[in-house]
Image 1 (tube, rainbow, N blue to C red):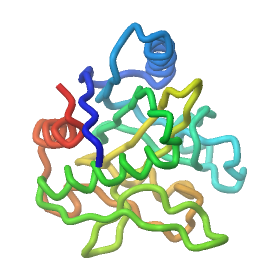
Image 2: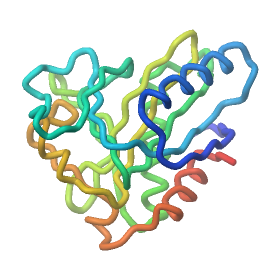
Image 3: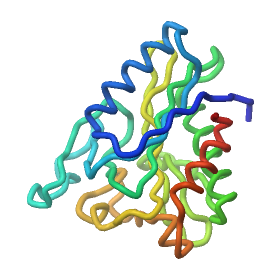
Image 4: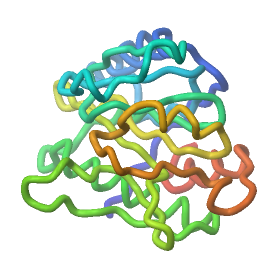
Length: 211
C-alpha cells in the first residue's frame, strides 16, 4: 500500500447537511490544489442516508422519527448516529488509481486500525452478480463493523467510512442496510465489551497517516 499522508480535521457531532456543505467546500479546495489530502473525523446526529439506487422497501418506517436523506455517494442505505466515527476522505487520486482502487485501500487501512484496537477484521471480495460487499467485517463473528460509500469528482474523492464504536445499534434493524437484508451490523463495544472513542480516533488517524 502506497504512503499517503493526510491532513487531519477533527470535530464532534455535526449535522449531516452542514457536514455535506463543508465537505463540498473541501473537495473544491482540493480540486484547485488549495489544500492537501484530508481526513475529516466526526460524528452525526441520528440520520439514514441513501444512495440513488436504494429501493423504497429498504427504507425505515417513518414513525421511527429518524430523517432519511439522499446523498451523492455510492452504496445503499446506511445509518449514522452518536457513538459512530465517520471519516470523510478528500483525496486527489493518482492517474493510475480509480475510486474502486481507493475504496480497497480504505478497507485495508480500516482493517489495520481495528487490528491495533484488538479486533481482527477483514475485507471481502464480491461474488459475481452479488450486492457489493464493500466495507469491513469481523473475522471471528462475520459481522459488519465498517460501512464505506465514496465517489470521485474531477479526480478527488469524497464521502468515506462509518465505524460503529459504542452507539445504539437498534436503528440498523429498522431498515435494510447496505442492500443486504441478512447483514448483522456490529460495533467495537459489542465485539470487545468496551470501546473508547478517543482510542478509536487515534488508531484510525494513525492507519491513514493523518496528523
